[in-house]
Length: 208
Image (cartoon, rainbow, N blue to C red; front, side):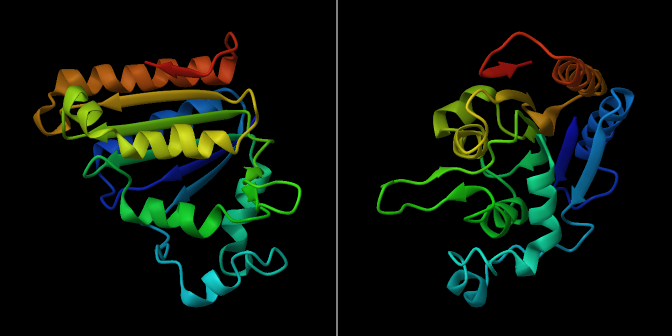
């Protein structure tokens, strides 16, 4: 297993950092090769520039500004996101990572004369996991439409392998969480990672 973990939280001591650590621990226990992208620590620039947009469809040069990230994406067979849900969606820095790194020729193929729509480019990615925290409740997040979850588990999942297994674990009502609820959540994260690294029956999305 070659796992790329994309982590987005600005505070080193956050609960999301604890989630990240459980994810990394379980990957290493399973003997996986791991690459960690810590977007805030690395100072990742979220905004797609005018120059990048101009070169967006030029697969010979569009990776230039984000070459290391694109290489990591092409290297992995497992893609894991750890982040807080803000305003029901992705933190801006993580959305920017998608904008700048999931490029034509890397993550998907552009339409052409024979294909009217985009086609998957991450067909080497067989497992996709999302670990997040939400200040809102499950029902309110669902009412709004959970755009962050939909972006990753529908949008990104579409460009992965056809039978890519997906996993989703969220701690809702994070603002009123307790020591007990956080411990339970970390245990769920650990169990999900054990299922993910140990293999499980074929499926689409597993929610713990």
